[in-house]
Amino acid sequence: MISFLPPDALERKDMIRALRLYGTRVFLVGNPMIFTAVIFIAFAGLTAQELHTALLTQSLEKALQHTNVFNAALAATFVQNCLQTHSGNQIGASQAPAIPGLLHAEARAAALMSMVAIVALSGLLAWSGVPLHDTLFYTLLNTIPAVAQWYAPPQNSPRRIKTLTTVVGISLLMGLVLLTFMTNFPRWALTRPAALTIPADLAMMGLLTTAIMTLPNRLHSPAMLAPTDGMTAPAPDFVAPESVPRVAPQDLSFYQLRQMLLAPSSPTTLRNDLLVSLLMPASVILIMSSLPLGHGSFGTRIAHLTPGMTILIALQDAWISNRKHWPLLLTTGRFGSRLEFVRSVFAAKANRIAMTAPLRTLSLMLPITLFKPLAPSHALLDGAELLIATMGVTFCCPLPFLLMKQPPQALVTAASIAPAFLLQLCNPFFLGSRLFAPVALTIAALGALCFFLVPFRMARSDWPYETE
Picture 1: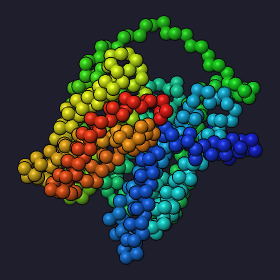
Picture 2: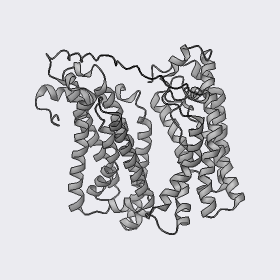
Picture 3: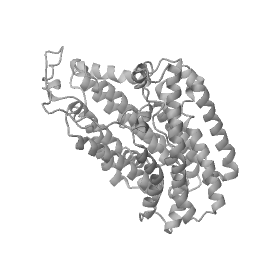
Picture 4: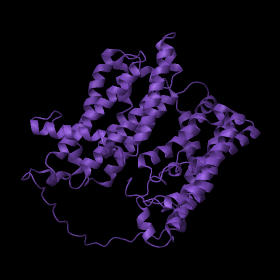
């Protein structure tokens, strides 16, 4: 592993040059999480202000019961995602090993920016009155999933190793979310003694730094990282083609071909899509409610948990922000003109959401209807409003194209995530059916407006080269 501190003046200049990129267009343009990170940093600031006010009249334990400090954890997660995107583009580029000093400089800059971001977010939360060593401990605990994301396996690793790394990262993230919503984990983490948190802080910071600093060794083969004449990297060894012919994949179904407009990699089958939509929200709720982490009876835990799971039916995929495959599909001529192509994408999404949204909504409403219990008429009204809002949220994602001719990818990504969080905060479980009804109709009207108007504007834009 390379040293964190540059040993000579030349490497210090390289690191400073790499650090300067974080304030330029190179870092901002094409970074899909930048706006989302800014939004949650703002939420973390509001949370710190709310906690600061509460601590003037309440104890820390009581103030934390009424404050959503998870905003700070989400801010740390999205900031790490921004840094991972940028450093992955810089370090993972095929020509990166040929540029003297680039890999080491970018790794050092990424590690330093990661530490600065964590300390800054911890300091923002500590401004409320919570000790800094505790806020740093809480932020670093919620950054653990990012360690798995930073620790990208080597390119020549077996597929099972790459799959295992991905599963570990997702499991860690879901575990922290589970602890946050089902236990008093935030209050526990923010009230630990300094004798525990300070050594733990140093250990976790060292683990994160190690994962970042060793990134070049995993993104490039040892031959490409070997010392050279300072100008070029050695050419990789030629790999002979496999002598055994590969088996041709099975023909894709019409549904899978249609879904390639939305996501070209591994399009799901109709059966799997319907089964996942029907079973996933209810399964998550039932499993989490079965764990001995909450308070009260099984039904009470379900009633408490379900409102927080609305995001399971509202969060959309990257169907509008991932447009890298559009030019290739357009050139096949199967979809007609650019306008007809974009309309085909919107139609494919509309067909899919028309089949999956009712099943996801039903899967969410069944547990709370059975165990709360909820009156059938009330449950039917809540479910209908959620369905209308979910379908509207789907087509609010391309909203930036109504306002800008060529919106940056980061803004499109933020617009894809923001409506889901809006529906999470404003749902019938919190607002009641009478107040949620106009919200659902407004979202649906905005989604319909985007569905009919955005294709005309997207057909005239130059996708995706400028923003992706």
